[in-house]
Length: 111
Image (cartoon, rainbow, N blue to C red; front, side, top):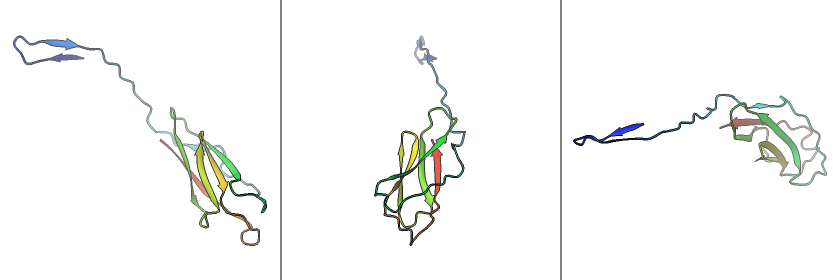
């Protein structure tokens, strides 16, 4: 890079500049599996880790964020992001008589 002033006589100076092109977020993250099926006991305690989800992103140094987007209307589960994984935790006691099956939809995004 060369910089020149408007003086008389003009003076100039040069510097070497290194430019690093960063990877853009052009690859969508993908879960390792499409569907996950688990069984959960009524005796499971609050805070139990129900499932650990993993997604892959071909971008350089992806930061993945997981979130429950459907099926958790009663707030029975929560999700935390930890070390590139999405962990689903139990936040309310399960009752087989009230719900024999629960389907959650989880989204992962990368940045």
